[in-house]
Image 1 (cartoon, one colour):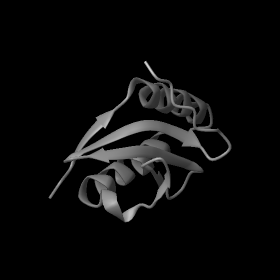
Image 2 (cartoon, rainbow, N blue to C red; image 1 turned 135 degrees about the vertical axis):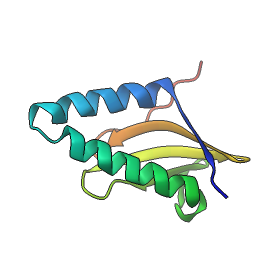
Image 3 (cartoon, rainbow, N blue to C red; image 1 turned 60 degrees about the vertical axis):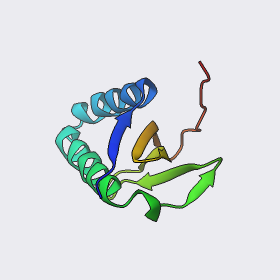
Length: 94
């Protein structure tokens, strides 16, 4: 069963920032491909990633030192943030 993916505004900002950074060094397409590969894997197998904090799971990129922070609710994978491994996860409550 394929799960639906929903991306938060914070995750969208994180992705745009990372893409902008890698555009300068000519690695934007490689970064984007790595992200899309992880999304495809998440759609098929979201429960393979372990919970690391309050039901938040992490999927690590294959090439880059980034991870996708997400939660699973029913048949929906909700991406909270896309962070470099040196960044700290801070969830904003609105």
